[in-house]
Image 1: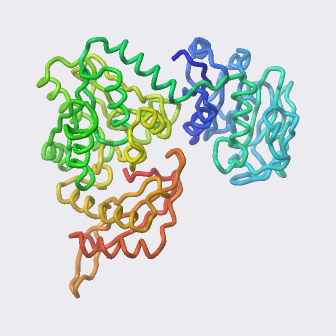
Image 2 (image 1 turned 45 degrees about the vertical axis):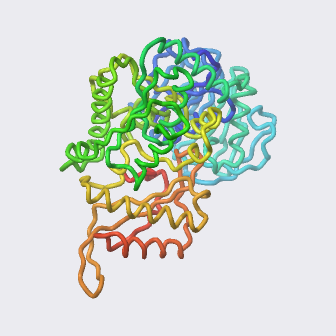
Image 3 (image 1 turned 90 degrees about the vertical axis):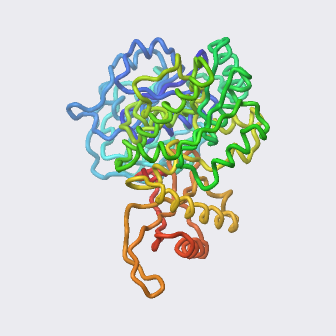
Length: 514
């Protein structure tokens, strides 16, 4: 990619994706790399700026994530956040120590508005702190530009070298003016023009795809979800009749969703995608029989997807490229970006088998976050009801059935989910909730129905509100709505005698159950 960029160097912080996302909100392209990335590679990328993330360690401990002092001599503006701020100070000759008082959560910070970072920030602003250590003594050449009651160096700068250290997290929404601070760093200090926009992304992607594909044939994995739908329409715009879209109904979709996908993208729909539907429900159920580990389920579903596509490709002749709707959080959460541990393997990233019978896999959305994908969809003219539909995981209900997946369990969760979504819609809550669904737990409990003892499953309901799907809060659904949903599920769905509501945020949980 020839655009200007800022890179995030990840030291294992939980907000690494969020930092990159906030930079992109400044219309500047941003990618995440591990702190182990070779310095020469960083030079070759020629970033306009570098951001060092937080991390779980103390920078002065043996074996802690570190960086070369040479990084700070490249002449590139660098912003250190939390651990990144402490590491910058430590490497450059300052002193970092365990704080007498730990700061965590919303904290009032006094800022020096003469700093370019804080030029239009309120003198007393609320920021999100999360640290055990603090900068006890600044490195030579730095001056303090922010403080709190317990932290005399909440931020520091060496303006001459364009090095900035911030103890708090400007990337989280709890830091009320954090977006301003990051904007000033990226646009004012780094000098980025801000030319990362979706209209130019669409044009450049179509041009790049045409050049790469040439006269080759393309097979697209179409699930009907937002990501794969946008990828399919983008490829259709680029290569037209060279594209064939295969929709695999693996039996793990929401109730009646297979027919809905075919109605939109099939021969009766508005898109010329050479649509093929493959009904492979029994095949997937057989592969998943007896499997309870969520990572194994994801990998089995991912590999079986590829095998189905290979078979369909052979039916239509030589196929050169396979298209998948992989997006950037899929890559990072699968352990392929930055320094984060594997959170979950996505079926189109970490779940790929070692051998795939295509010349190349195309992932045109691989560098985009979810809201950026939606912008691309609108730019391509896809109707809003499709662009803003509920997110659905690639492995489908395979990760909303905790434990072994069976046809009966899938039916239970399909019926419960349909009731839940119907009542959320009736209550007018569907537009205010970013994701909501029912999952089948692996727990069975004693109940009483019709004066008889039952021993049946518990269904868990989930609803979250989020801006970017990297952090999320459980939604406060009205009690009356939850009671109505519960009553209907227990009365209408067989083998369910208990309904739970999950109020866990992300983190520490994930939005999905597995």
